[in-house]
Image (cartoon, rainbow, N blue to C red; front, side, top):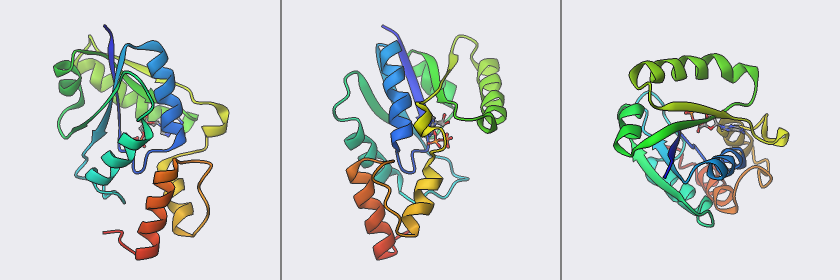
Length: 163
Ligand code: ADP
């Protein structure tokens, strides 16, 4: 039974995240999508909101769990007997940061492997911050997110409830 964790901020979850998740599911027996609480980031959606959106997005997938973590990622991985950390690689620009994180995690826990997956080309330019920016200006983001995320984005920007 091989478990992988797929950590991220998911603010909000996009079809790019789901593309990577589907690839991870094809390789591992179980994937734990891990919502990170980063005190240095000020997300648009609260952790509870991001959890709700993630839960809805993965409801039809098998062998996927969702968890929140606010500590050291490798500790979370160890506790869950995960053998791998999944990260998505879009462009060269992702590489430096990802490489640094992967090396640090390897130093902390050599038995946990970082696995980089590439999404379908159509998602290579997609990230949560682009989605947030487009939605803020009233642009339709149906192609990039689940219907529930689309709805919640509209609510956020219509009501101005952005913290
Ligand atoms: P983080 O703040 O940890 O980067 P994100 O939610 O932005 O969290 O992303 C989580 C993971 O998903 C990262 O490895 C990121 O590279 C990957 N990812 C996000 N969007 C895409 C996409 N469109 N294609 C491929 N990977 C993606």
